[in-house]
Length: 300
Image (cartoon, rainbow, N blue to C red; front, side, top):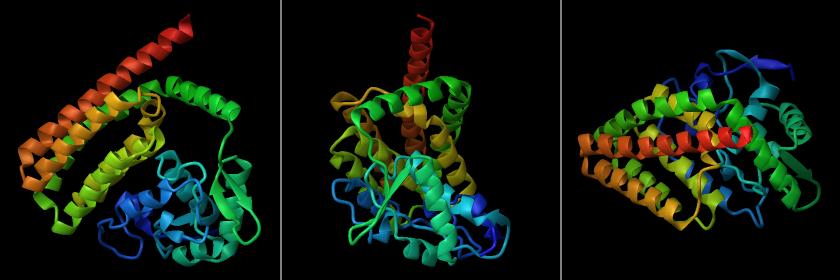
């Protein structure tokens, strides 16, 4: 297997299927499996490594040349970074991964070894073996938390710009979604919202929140919007995971998502735009307060 192979050009739109462009078609596709992937990701106590539905991967074919080992590793990193693959969740088997991408197993094995060396995944042998997103102990969790704080402070300017981008783009995306959504896509959005309401903990809630926004973006059928919204959320992730959690915060978010969903369902384009604008602007205000507080605490 060569170090690099020809890969589809619209992988630049998004390495994962939830990024809104399929690698086995020349036209933008709608993403029917994001919510299913999140549902699989929520089961972290006894993940099934044989279940390949946790990730939906575009096959690789002719087009731009990429390092296939890095391509595979990026697929996993991106889902972990967006919170869609939580600690303890199973990755597809090496064989399933290779089959879905249309490549040999060697690049997958190399990518998995790289991810394991980075401490992102662990690999287990035996009947219930496979590759899993790494679990952390309490001390590691605390160190990871400090790492997130450091990352948020180091990238605070980028985070602010990403939030500004979201405030401009996501309301327009909601307007388009209300005008273009199909009955099937509306059901997907409703399922994504149901995941949010069913979230049992903060990690599940954050993951479900991301799924809702990415699902809504995908309904626009515009891969440029999907890519931009996905990348801006990745940039904001260090700050978003540090925002206050718990009942009141969850209730406000659920209520705002409900209003957005109702507007999209009713085809009320202006209302969909307005409710999303209020939602992301509240998030931006919260992020600004958080970053200011973190910076002040570092000075003390």
